[in-house]
Image 1: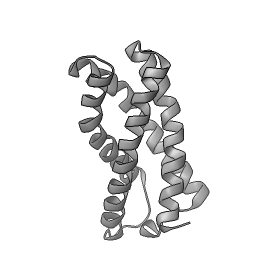
Image 2: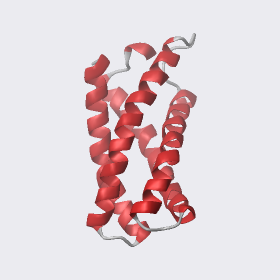
Image 3: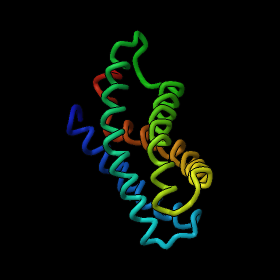
Image 4: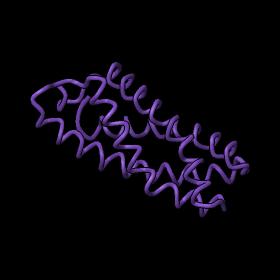
Length: 139
């Protein structure tokens, strides 16, 4: 599976799992209700979907120009860190506002989610590539 179809399947599967995990994490870590936390999780998901499409397009363009093909540990780790780093910039202010906590508290809350999502992103990408094969950029 390649191109836009691959990206749509990837983003859909990734975000459905992410919304469930984020709702639980935000509710637990912020003492918010599940309903209130789920709104933040869905908003974060919408932001993450847009960022995912932008970031993966740019990453694959960069990857296609590399002499070494495939996705080794370091390339996968760089992908996960770059993606999550971009989300921190937008999600911390969102969480602080919606959950009515300080920016510092939102940052600390986001750190817990970052650790989870770094591992999740790495594992999800590995599993996705095993099931659907590598994208053309990595072959």
